[in-house]
Image 1: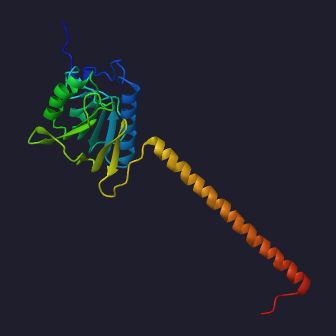
Image 2 (image 1 turned 90 degrees about the horizontal axis):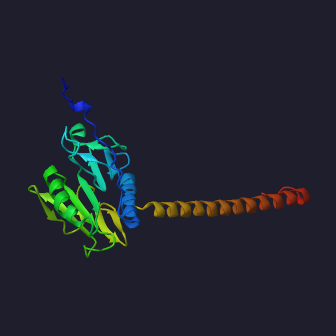
Length: 230
């Protein structure tokens, strides 16, 4: 007699062995977006996941999708092997897909419809090569359960302005206008700060040497002529 399989016995794979992205350009856009948003949301009750299975129907492991980048609020920070909506009890607020002609139909039809039905507030398509989206970036926001195009390229959940910067998405804070630096820019900014600190240290050492020289001259004066008159 066969025993019934319980929901806890069902396996939800974390990988299908498929490549993360079609090209290096798409992979770079995914990883850069992931790192920028992780830094931005650091310290908040939120997580940013990239190319990981999101399961949306308990007991049905084939009901899954792997968004290129997804942002989920009101959950524990940190990574996961996969994301199960019924366990976390939160649907992603923002999803990014780095699209291409090869994924165009799936991104525009299946995924767009699925994310709409799941209640994903914003869905962004980024075509880093500009192969089928002439402006490269297009966003959709959920209004009355239907996606409408975002005209101003502002993400409401993230409170960020999105721009196209070559083959990457640029992110700018709504409150200050400051850009969220990508890893290379962060490294360059850190190097610049280290250089400035070294320059200040060098200047400080020069000033200390000048002071030491003056004190030495005064000491020689005292030895030769006595204390200076008051």
